[in-house]
Length: 185
Image (cartoon, rainbow, N blue to C red; front, side):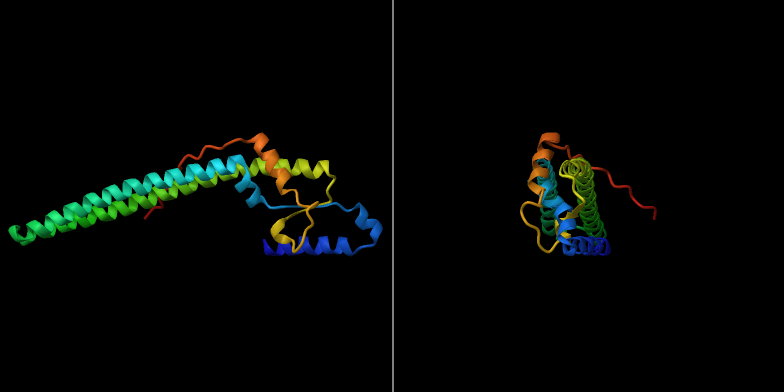
């Protein structure tokens, strides 16, 4: 990716340094895809849904952890009344519950992240099409990511136009957690 960005920057620099007749005809556009997605309605919707889903996981985790803490407290209070084997079995059961809770939280978090990535791909697909349309309309010779350019004037940056077009095409995107396939052991 770095080599591609470097090559694009070199080509753009070479075209800028060419004789003035050629540079007057050369149209270069710059865009910031991450910023465009973050500022778009679909991107904001996606971000809000991801945060809500993460909050639900945190809330259920806190509730389960509280329940386990209460069970551990009861176990500590009753440990003098229990046989060592029974106590050991109860402690192991509690440890197993803790491990299962951690695994469950990890799986839910991964599912949310995978759903977010799938939703982001939908937004990126629409953004790429809109960017293609913008470049055709402006008869651009070169279109670069903002990260590949050291300096770009405001007339060459089409990020805000991309955001407007994204908002017209895609008001929101649904983020649905995707179950992550477990690898074979």
